[in-house]
Image 1 (cartoon, helix red, strand yellow):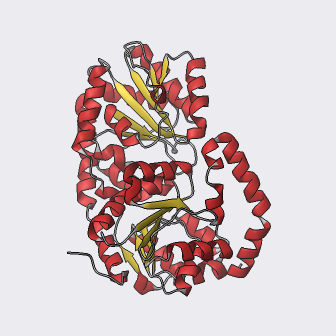
Image 2: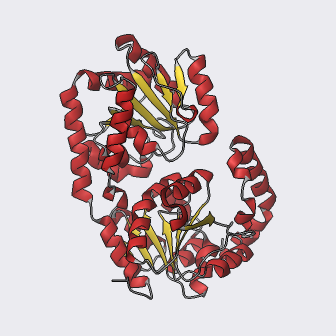
Image 3: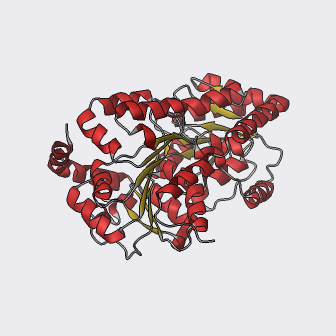
Length: 427
């Protein structure tokens, strides 16, 4: 498939895209807002000639945050435009940066929408986070001589095989990229094999290792937990859970309560459209449940706190003693393990971590990752860590050592981006 055929198929798929958007809006009403932006209609007013950063969803927005902060500091004369595709990513960017950045949804990868978006923003540099590759957007930039960088780039073997089947589309698209800042050498080689120019591919590491925790966040978390009277309670978090995982987590928590009746679970579903259903599930299963979004008080009798807010995950991690990271008991590939590791939390996950193989391997080698398969093994791991605080502390230190050993990726990425910018940072 070449780009012309891809574009034709994308136009033919527009009715299906519209139906899918309606379905998502039915499940999550925020998808019904700002629909015009997805077709480059009704875009907010924007300053031009700046840096455009695309972070498709919540995970990429979290990863992009340190980069955006550094770009704001180093290039204060350039407007920063951030685009997303999901309401969760949009909410996170707006919560973190407000009016300091320009923001909208990225239009669909239709040539006429790409052209309209490009004329509206006219960036000097485009940065795509991780592996959200859109051929027409990339081509639009290349046509106008705007360098495009793939930042914090990752490409699993499975994804590489998929791109390889579309070589006539993939190879020209990758050849139009000016920089591919890959997380690992294995991923860099996959990009080269798919058609990226070898001189444009660098191994910079993952900027997720450069996470900095605001000390005020730790203070606020400690104060809130103290206000619950929960400083001595065993508190654990199951974060970024997907359909099929919540039932396992709640079953493990039920077993834990039989041994430790004061235990508190903070349950944080990955997708907002599942918040209400998970509150109902928890209550139906007989757990005394409060919802974070309702401002309900956590009391000695509370067994489950549902983290049904946006932009608070790091804070919710800070409230807990240990963390299970979801998307891993089902074949989703896992989610960011480094946020709880940076907070000094012993880590638990399921076995499906193919999106984070290198990071998981390092954490496992350092002793800060226990993999579980079901409710029983999850309960066993949680109970053991609460019963053996010295082991929990050793795991936490192992995770912190992995972060310290891998930091510096952000500086390496920024150095590569500086070479692409036709301007130099203000002194």
